[in-house]
Image (tube, rainbow, N blue to C red):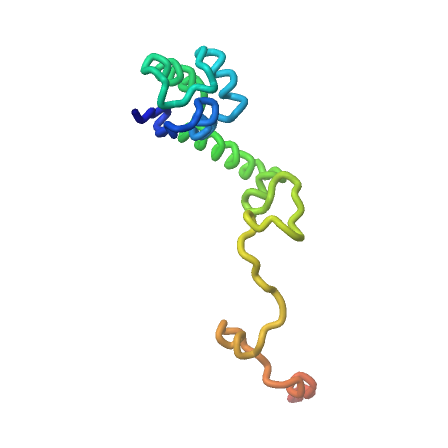
Length: 147
């Protein structure tokens, strides 16, 4: 029997205390409180839950913000940080780590794939549409003014 809580199909082969983490916003700390409230044994498998236990779990989880509701709350909080111009908001807008991590090395998940920055060949620059001076001699020639 597939158990569906908060719009998520729970993995039936896992124990209740681990399987509930499949729901966005429900972590190991929340689960402990939920299982104490509903009086369900955490070592019980999800497939072994009765329909009455599943409804008790649903009622307990409905009290917490989960899935889409929680995602919208988080995105609103980030939007507010950006509009106030806080340091964290600026870091979110730039796509950089917001919690003080170093970025000189690491931070690949936030900054993306490595891109080499430096000197380029004339051939490559011309493909990008950048004009390249032919030689250094042109730079050294004095400019004649007409009077």
